[in-house]
Image (cartoon, rainbow, N blue to C red):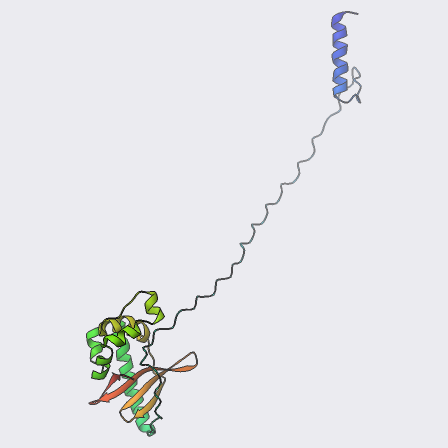
Length: 205
């Protein structure tokens, strides 16, 4: 047999083996038409995953505003007054506190001095008293050392009294009252006030 024919037959045999040997080639047969499989429908895009809900962290509790050691409730019994005196005094003290709120909000130190009794000025100018107040945690954390009445105004009165509100009065004498503000359901003394020549002044406890 010619070498070319032998080589051709060998090649065809190898090809048949490679294709699995399951198909015979018959001369003259047309290869069956191959129909491509219908294209699969495009996959629907996945809905974007909803962002994981993150609950807001609870607010960090703030330290209470510093209250000077002098702002302790007085132990004296309440002084009885008529309803008319109470209402008139309440109106006068409420106006005084509103004026103080504006002065403190503006950090108007000189104007603030006009609303103080001489005893108050003297007490909160005392170096020993100022050193004791400087031991308050909120002042120590901020490395604040009070050295003067102005320091006391800037670092204690300013942060704690700019938004005061009068809710009640407690008479200690006919010319001295405690101005009370209800905070979280509890009465808190804002000021001790004394009437000096017809004007209410911030007094020392």
